[in-house]
Image 1 (tube, rainbow, N blue to C red):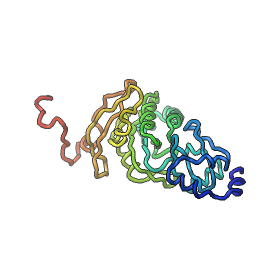
Image 2 (cartoon, rainbow, N blue to C red):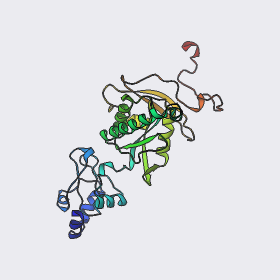
Image 3 (cartoon, rainbow, N blue to C red):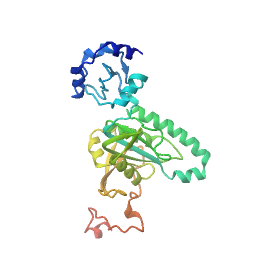
Image 4 (cartoon, one colour):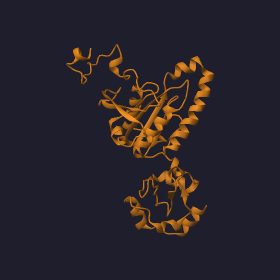
Length: 285
């Protein structure tokens, strides 16, 4: 390969490598080291290899992002598209599943098979269009996960998915931003767990966000979209409640039943949650 020929003929440039580690712009002298690899999801940005120690993958104009050693070796030796590598560090996760999937498979398996095939295509296209990456095709059952370096892209992707006709499927979508780790191409750790619990609160057709993601997308939402504050809610199995927001748009349903929290269960032993209407029961009745 061209990379191996160039790499073997050029010594490592420590100054360049250190500049990349510091997050500086990729030095133009590195461009002559090897052919450019196009990052299709990011327009005209290019990835240039100086050596195996030159591991810059610019996620945005003028910035560099760390690519773990194992993955940069794969890029160098196999010519992988770096835009499709799952991002690490601080990302926004989109986690979605099909509401009442088991029931739908039992009642209309043929229709569901067709609908899931359509869903796979729609999801893949939407994620790619908004600069996201799917670490795996399927997460659990009929659920899927995608990662985005920008929270606003994740919100736009979620909105596009809910605006697309997927009948008889209805998606429940949760968005959360935090630090992630990859293990065998799967995200692990508190961030993916919290995202899953957020998604579990939602109803089919609904998009819910954590406070962290809500803060990041404020002022950066797609045209005509807005957020609704749903209040603070407990998340199953997690000690810290989450302030939940809903992503709204004129093209999608806005009104839903209460979130699927522990307090909605008749067997719940948790104390009742207080709201801003405490002491005003007479007025609101």
